[in-house]
Image (cartoon, rainbow, N blue to C red):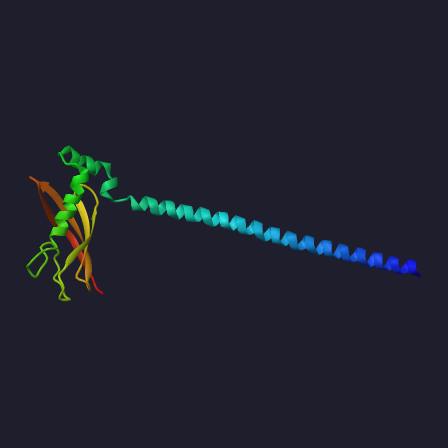
Length: 166
């Protein structure tokens, strides 16, 4: 009788161990599969982010004077140092913000909010064109300018402009 009880206990323990082993193995395989899937998805997402970042990085350098060798060479051949030329042009535009009249000397739109129109952002595209944005605090717009340097004087000519509605 004692032997049978020990044998039943042994078989029961053996079955319990086998059940625990199989159950643990299935849980570990499931976790391993989930981890593998997550790692693959993570790799795909990182590749997607890298591709988007590369596209954005190339866009940052598109249509910029300081990355356009031909535009810089144009002014260097005329005797200008680029490190002094770009601030000269930008300062010339920003100095137009100081005006006594009612209308801005360059911006073709009159202020409708009572504040003065002011140039707030400038991007030199190449050796001939500049894009500026302007605002009076409520209304804003953009302009495409042609610029030229004659005898140390900068001249600006409006090519096109637009005003956004708030």
